[in-house]
Image 1: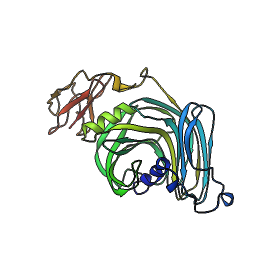
Image 2: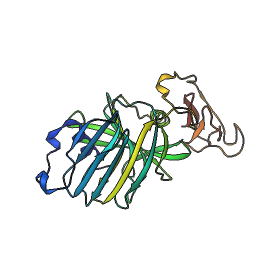
Image 3: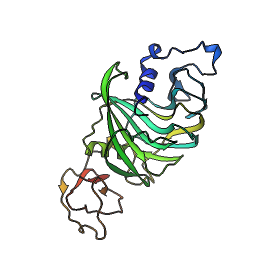
Image 4: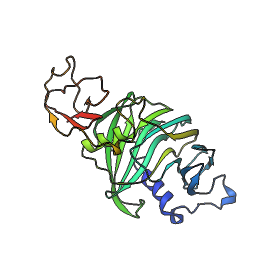
Length: 289
């Protein structure tokens, strides 16, 4: 959530100072707050102690959470450090109230908290930020937002930092997330990431009840639309920009400002609406700016 998520993950990383339960452990059905390695994956679980939250690590990249009248919690499995990897996931996510499912991580220098939101309940977690455009990736359009947190807890202690959001317009539970597409689109919008800390498939809830049972794994570039794979290992092959007109390029309707207009494997519009220019971020992604 825009107003609480930094508190959640800051507590996960910076330790017991933020992990103290409100009630004695024996009086609440909550798995102890912790981070570590399980099944070959990095995991993180934090709850503020309100309500009942039960986090369970499964085999490999699997985990599950059951929560009832929760205050704040975030849980998930992934990697440390994160990277521009292709992530596959599957499972169930049931959050009719305020909760969401996302690829979640942090970077340092600059300090950034980021989300690629795949599904959510009653609240769009990016809506409190400033919209910066859209990105098309893995068969859907995501809205890009940025928000600023001032003097709030983070993985580096109390700090001022930005949150970057990609929120999927059509919710789904299961599929492939090509994180490089989002990272490149954020960069094209002036939202720069730093050195990666951790990166997880997160199930999060705020003052709600629900459940999730999820499995995460690292995928490959094969079969991913709009590029994919660990694009950090591929140097950009095109850095110049090209101006286009309203009905130029491949003909038909041109992409709106902030929309995708090119990249390897791209089959959509290759021209931009009047007043915007198609700019190549790398071989996989170009955007109307």
